[in-house]
Each structure stands twice: as C-alpha cells, then as structure tokens.
Amino acid sequence: YPKGGRLFFFSILGALASLIPSASLAMCLDMLSVGKQNAPHVVSVLELPFAVLCLCGGFSLAAVAAVSVLTRRSAGRELSAGSLCEGLDQMPVGICCSMQDGFPRLVNDTMQRISNDAFGVGVFDAALLERRFAERSFEPGCEVDDRDGIVFLRLPDGSVRHFVRGNIAVGGREIIETIAYDVTDSYNDMLEEEKRNEHLAQVNRTIREYDRGMDRIVREKEVLAAKIWLHGELGQCLLSIEGYLNGDNSREAVTNELSRTVSLLRSNTAPEHSEDRMSALFEAADVVGVKINIDGEFPTRNRDIIEIAIHECLTNTIKHAGGHTLDVKILQTDGAVTVELTNDGEPPRGPIEETGGLKDLRAMVERRGGEMLVEHKPRFLLKLRLC
Image (tube, rainbow, N blue to C red):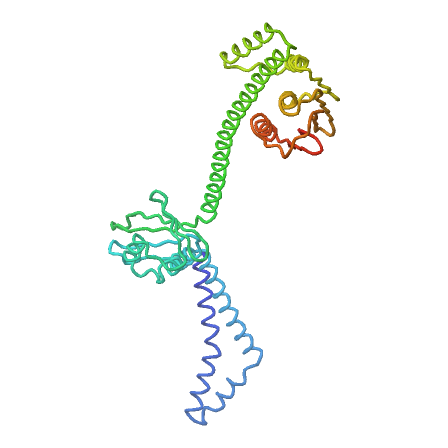
C-alpha cells in the first residue's frame, strides 16, 4: 500500500479490534438491565475464554501503536508550517518580516532575544523599533559603532550584530525583511587589525622622529668637529708664534703656518684625520720645546678623539703648566680604550673649569658613548674611556 493507505488500513483495523470488548461489555450491561430471562445469554458472553479477550486487547494495542508510529514518521518526513517555524527559531541570525505599517508577520526567537537585549522589549511593532534604532535609543550595555553608514551593535552579552533591511514581494504585497547577522568574530578581527595598524603607524612615527633626531645629532656633531678643528688650528698657530718669540722658530715658518690656516678657513673644510695630523702635532711640540711620549698603540676607532685630546693637552701644557713633557698612555682591554694624558708642569691651583677645547672634547666623547675625567691633584690628568 502507499504510505497513506497503510495508515488508513491500520486505523480501521485498530478501531474494529477495539470494538470487540467494548461491544461485549455494552451487551452485558444491556442484558442485565432487561431482566433475568436473558441472564443465561449474558453469562455466556462474560464466560468467553480469557485468552480470546487478551488476544483482542493486544491486537487493538498493536494497531494503535502502528498508527502512532506511522503518524510520527509522516510528520518527520513532511515539511509543515510548524517545522518551518521551528527551523527559523534555531537559526543564529535574527529574522523579522513585517508589513509596511510595522505589523510583524514572522519573527524568529533569535530576533526576539536581540530586540529584548537592545530595546528592552520584543518585536511587536517593527516600525517603532526601527525608529529607536535610527535614534540610537538602546538599552544600557549596548555599544554602537558607525563606520561610514555601516552600523555594528554590540549587545550586553558581547555579541556583535549587523542589521540589513530590504523589501521582498510576497503575494503581491511588499514585505519588509530585517536580518540581524552575527558578525562577532569578523568584527573582533577587524578591531585587532586596526590595533596592529595603529601600532605600526606609531612605530613608523617613532622611526621618523628618530631619523630627524639623528639628522640633528649629525649636524651638531659636524659643528662640534668644525669647532674642535678650528680651535686646534688656531692653537697650532699660537704655538708657532710663541716659538718664534722665544727664538725657536723662524719668521718664514710662522708665516707659512698662518698662511696654511687662513687658506683652510677660507675653504670651509677641515682636513681628514690621518698620520699627517700626528706628525704636525709632533712638529709643533718640537718647536715649542715639548716632548710627546706615547705609550701604546692608537686604536682604529676614535683615533680622531685621541688626537684632539693630545692637541688640547699640548696647548695647556705650554699655556698653563709651563711643562716640557706630555705623557700619553693608551691601554686597550675588552674592546674599550683608556687614554691617560699628564704633563710635568706645575699642578693646577684648583679644580679645572672645562671651557673651550675641554668642553668641546667632553661633548664629543659623550656623543660616542665614552667617559671623560679631569683631575687637578696631585697633578693634571685627563682620562678618557672610549668604547
């Protein structure tokens, strides 16, 4: 039989089987009400075998069970309005279909929960809820993020919804369809991406500021190097002039030294540090009667600073101490260089005020991460530690 025919057959069969005991009971009651003349007939009905009565009852129950099973199977295989509504209620998106006047025709449970969380009331008037949404009139705990017309609503439970509204035609009538999508994961990923982008932007700003700072430091370093170089050249000229006044230098040598210095000043460029600079220092010291003793080897790095320090101490030995010997000790250990400069002249009368060349020298040393120490007891000592 077809599915419907089987259901009809089992229904009729169950009904007939259930009529047998019912008819017997009704007959017995009727006979008893007529009188005793029918009593023998009544007794014969009641004295039916017990097995027959059990068989009729079991057959009746089996027919009812078969009808129930077929009914459930039929309900599970066929799409009905109830099953459609149940499926919509279990969907994670909120769905609301309403008329143009706001009367809701279809609202699933998800949309009802969203409306209660956002507005404190279920969907009874879709037009009213739409106006409250446009006015941003939400319950406490809700957060709205409007991104160029795309609105995200974070509910108190932490989920994020994005609402899409459209019109559909059903049976010749316009229905307003509103869908609330769950975009929690996508929205949180977007926020994380924005945080990463902001961090990268901050890093880029820091790098740009660092570059500007480096440019400023380089300019200051160049100015400082030029000042030190100028101080050294002028000091060397003074040493030549002093040697001439003491009779240790010729007029022609002084004139040549002055001419060279003026030429360098006009060119606005400083000569590169090389062996020629140390040779010039030795020559200048020899002219003024000062001997430079160097103990140790010059390092590859920071050689220019050591040369400037020797030049500064040579000038101070002649100008302030009146000495004849300048001792330079260079010690290299563990990647660091220690330089100590002393002279045999008169010790300073008090703490040395760092001005002019010493001040510029300290600035240059500290720019390169080094340290500088100036002592006046028991005698003059200039100590440098360079990395």
